[in-house]
Image (cartoon, rainbow, N blue to C red; front, top):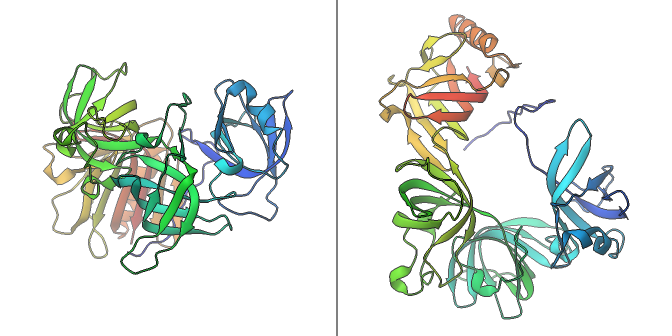
Length: 428
């Protein structure tokens, strides 16, 4: 696959974004509810990138040196750690106040790679106290970062287990089951033979259970439980996962074709059979299914949070659209030059647009959006859909060919309309 950069920068973002800021601690100001760090982007450990104040509020969660700390004690505990201790904060930035407020703060050994080797990935199998983890980003205590597609994690009764944003302190190694996203800290040893997997020994370390995303089509919705025909966990195909041992006995092991999600008091009454949904939450404890998953939030992708991608072969086509107006574009998906991609992805679930009973149309979701055209040696950005459509039509009239269209927004299957807040078009 050959890729090339195509970046759009927004001074006033159409959609709000969550941020991650990391760096060594400079000082704590308890009186004004903030602490200050020296910014270190990504996994950099040195150089100067400026400083920033990290504000906290009554909703900020703290984890310091592997221990959960109550909100009201967070800054006081942080003030006791040495200066230059590693920190990571996740939260939001208020542009008007020019202030970053943390939803979660990690410090000391809770920061991957601070004083222990660490890995981030998702459990795909478990046998006894040995986990198999897929898609592992390995962060060494020396500061190096590498990708290890698959590794094993050794647990013991001394392994500390915490659950992100759920600080009841009840988790143990029995909470770790296939499908769960985790961050692990311990001691790494590479494979000693070609047929062996590298091992991260967390016997005296810790495991943090991260919020996990699953996606699929709804099979049934009744009695505070969704059953899904599961397609992906953490954006990875479900057939990678071995669910052996997840159930109270083998007959209750998780079934991807009928994956049972406990929705509790979440409002899911409008979700119908065959709707594509993405569920955020935590996998059930190992050996305790059903249910297979406890939901914290359920997103119905039938009309939101969707990606549309349509491509054309060779140099592209002049017949990408059957109609172009100031309010919408109507795709032509019947040509022989249609490429491999003609799909809408909704929470990891793909819908083939050529199989739709309705024509697929592209329209603006909001009054203002970000619409880009890349071609003829330039990139043009528009915030007005009518101006974007007029420029695209003019380029096609002048002989430019449409190679690819990518849009972000919401897709409604019942009428075939994709409502976009971002559109990128590549021409030849």
